[in-house]
Image (cartoon, rainbow, N blue to C red; front, side, top):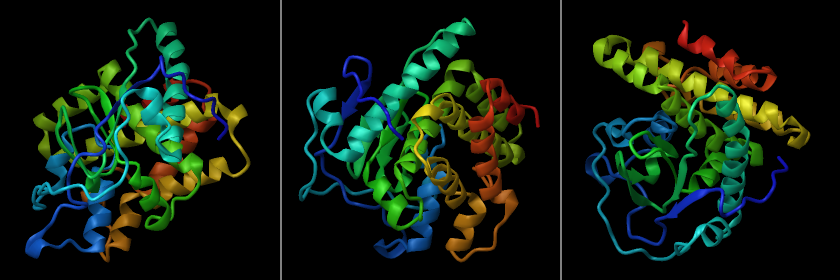
Length: 289
């Protein structure tokens, strides 16, 4: 996807990289299996709640001395240009701001762009501890997207979600949760989950699919910047992180009752719906089911 380079004055970027922290949280016996890690990565990936709650029995990460890696930038220009993954993330964030702001203005809804926080291994958020094993996430408490860019490597090498647009989709999906926060949708869903805990997973799926659809809206409104293969890259990423696909990869039989993000088919359909839609209202269908 051919995006303009970000304007450092138009993006809200923070950098927590360079602080200490072990790579992954440990489970029983101080180890976590690859299947468990994959499930933890994506079941917590893109949820707009305290991600720490989603790690279940996994223990807290024990801080340790940082052995190397990126040093935090002191401003948006430095942080966004620390490496290619950071630059791509900032470019996507800038494009998302430019795309969504006029849509909010047209609907007479106050718009506030989200922040983007880079961290490495372990960080802190308004929703609690940020840990790499959670994957990228949006915190509604401070309205910021949290990202350890090493997740992009994991997407490519471990999840089979390759290509720049697959990475852009990650930011666009998290941004979708910010849209839900600003419009009050996420608050309504959280309230409904508290009132009906048995429907919590089903309601979570609806929230996630709408965020996928919103990611597609952004892509569709910038289709002149899509390169050949970008759409396929995004749809493949949505497929790879479907709950059923992840459960199979972890050696488990897919259990729809346990889905929190939607099946591979649901996620690809939601992203495609947004891409092909001419108005973000097409994503309202997920709140009417």
